[in-house]
Image 1 (cartoon, helix red, strand yellow):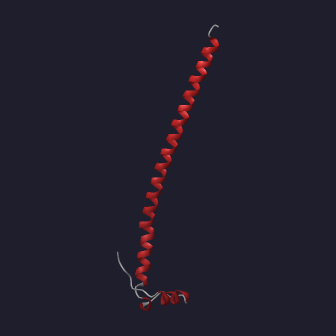
Image 2 (cartoon, rainbow, N blue to C red):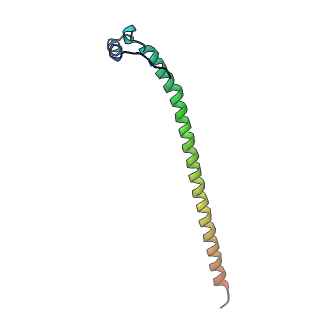
Image 3 (cartoon, one colour):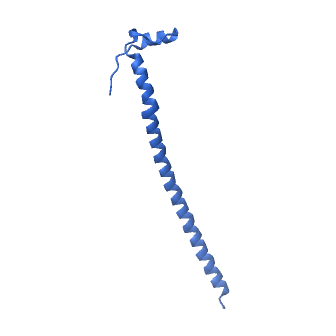
Length: 91
């Protein structure tokens, strides 16, 4: 991890007047470049990893729901068959 020595107020004043921050802002330019790299690469990678985990979790939830639906369908089919069998039996 790198620490930057910068002065935010001179950097802000330079930007407000349409200039790039100069030496009076310390390492503000280096800080800005590193922050931009961090957002483009590290944060994007973390976001993708989070999305992958969420998709895997949702896939598991969907599989559980499908299994439950199959179990209910099978149970209903069995009960229907039993009712048909009972109604077809001679008294």
